[in-house]
Length: 512
Image 1 (tube, rainbow, N blue to C red):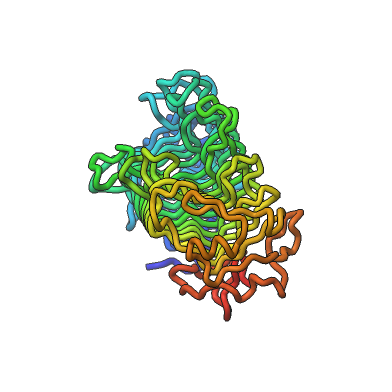
Image 2: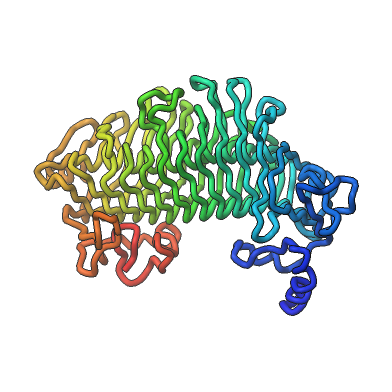
């Protein structure tokens, strides 16, 4: 039976003097209030692991709490610096409740990896192994580093299989590798579904900040292998030197290749910025770091994200020959002022995989390819088939390259319609590249490609293109000019969280 609000308030009042870790009302999960902790234990820097773990006699180490807790228990970590590597192997349950490790309200609980060795070659400052129903909330994880390509430091690492893990409101930063080349790897947050058929599922990663990472060939934040039915929402990822958020498949992470694919997930309402691989020793002088990268994932929705000042805004592809990212929709995203392409489909080389039956729907792409790479606003590379590009504002800067489908290796890489194009270079200075042929006129491209029966070349009239504020004014040609593809494709909300379907559909990430 659910406890009533009055009961919750009584317990909260009785525990207030102890700084008890009750779930914060804004951490998204309403069912957290259906049960109260079985036990609340405390950890403090001046504590003693032989004490009772009460507020007046706290334990000294987070690891001791991780080893001692059972389903329904909470560890309240008091403010201070804990110089330890923590591994959790106990699980909560759906009935008794999760095991929770949380910072004490209003206190900075820091797990610091300074000068600590990295166990097992690849390990996290905080690692969850085969756990279910565990919540990690409000911690700061920092300063885990290596100079060896044989070691992989990770801020927070989930591995194995399990259900119902929540990672909420943590700050992960300064995880670093100083080794050289693509054998060098580090991660801010990594999820590896290594079992099969048992998966990591029901995972929620919400409201975290991940920043100031030195990564080598790895991602800031990655889901790989047998990971399904997951949510990545409301996170900030910034100031790193490789990919922001990745959902990956076909890397041999899962025990059975049939399950080796991140799938059935949502990447929404994240802010990803200030990320570049330029100068990263693993890449040299290449603008190759994606804000959001689906590399061999399937049935994933990427929506309402803000991605700017990265290398490639959103990429959907596969790095493995004969494999694809498929059934992925990128919708209602703002993708602007990035160094290379705004959105990219298809493999980076003829020898790798591609993109099949993916959608780019109702996004706003603005003044990307700031570094003049020649990738343009919307790029289509190798092995792209049966994709859909609709209802997008595609606004190029002075380079004027709006669509860049340069390979010609497939006859129908994508179907385009109901998109609005514009360029700071003007109509005469704009380019659409289709199957390897350049067209310097919208009408010529439309005729040659048989695309864009309802498409437009016109200024979208943003509220403020300098700020930028990429909403359009009420009399913009984007208003009411989109294709009513239906809520399952369009999504329920625009990038601002307002209802998406109001009368006629607007082109771009915002709905009037």
